[in-house]
Image 1: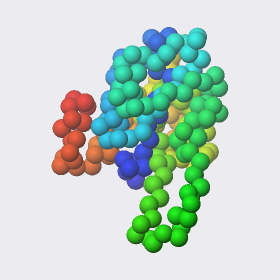
Image 2 (image 1 turned 90 degrees about the vertical axis):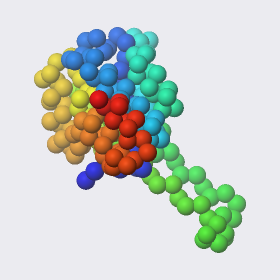
Image 3 (image 1 turned 180 degrees about the vertical axis):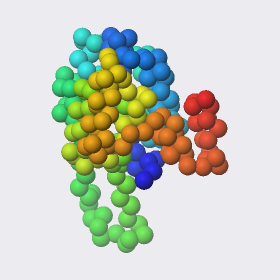
Length: 202
């Protein structure tokens, strides 16, 4: 099963100025988060960021913040470790709006098609074994497909990070890399943004 761009949303968890320096391989992790947000912008994939206790841990690091802004991403401030507990699920799957007026009585060719649900959540972040893990497990519980971008995730130790990946895979999340996401979203060298996406990855 490949990741479908038309049903995807991107969530970047807690890339914050006072947290990132303590992570394993912080520069590579931030660079991949930026790539993901820029890919989302290129391909009109909805993007979201989260910030854990921003008064204590600071806001999102500038490079990720700028890439999220390019993707027109919203940022959720939270105190719970799982962003789903703070309302992320409602952002990702807003309640259906009731039909206006007598839309159902319109001829079929005049009715607006229902928007495809974006239930594939591409997620990455810090710390992998705490906020990323709890958010991803709650998303799985809410019947989203969850794709964890391993090379854009980190913790303060490799053991904690890897334990998170093991647990997430066991719970039904798919483990992927930034390049997997890019080329599965694009699918073809003939895609209009192929060269731009390739430039981001190189």
